[in-house]
Length: 288
Image 1: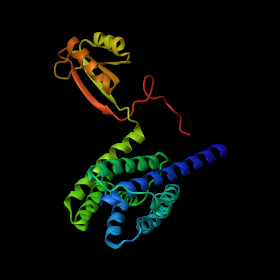
Image 2: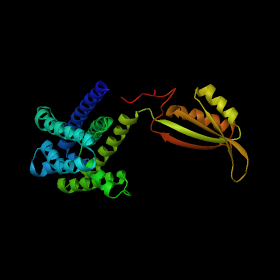
Image 3: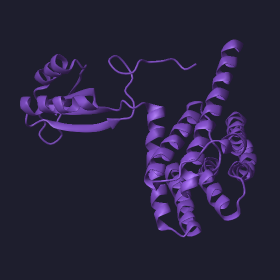
Image 4: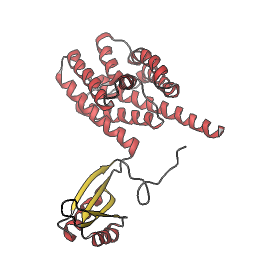
């Protein structure tokens, strides 16, 4: 057990440092030199750096300090220790290692896309070890503890929006706010890719009176499993079958064609599955 715990601790440290490095690269190479501040403490530090010249790494550490102290008492010490490591390593990497690396100054659209991608990748790697890069993540969690009715996604959007608006006034350019929104969108998508994988699936529910025929064609043509659930229509009182099936995105068109051709009166509900685990998809892995 002790050996397993040591391995987990090393993995957490490694992922935290890697996430901080990628995050610092995204800001240093792309967003900061092109006056893009995509929310969060790093975005706020970018704007303050533009106004005062203070180093961004040091600014993020200073802004994070009171939040880390509050988080130590309310959010758990293990979580905050990883966050402290992330904040400290980001400050050192940004202020002392990256100044020797050339920055990209050019097309702001490209900068927002590539910067947002690196930011999302860095944040996603940090989240893989149940950690955080600090900043407004801690503030939002503390607010939610005090007001449980507030959604964390709403709080994140609100705080990021304030920083984006502030950056538009600081840079005196509304375009920078628009590019920041693009970077934030790309960042969100990359976080999902890191945490859930790029291979998103579709979960399909099919209510039909021809369940056996549809299920057989799905298994033969798509080689996907189907779960059959007996069901009864509340209004018609007619007996039906509800089929549950998970497919990859590129397989959905064929499934839709099978259903329409076999039972044009079938009722379908289609949702996007962030992760599909099991035979034919991602293998089930035990937590380590």
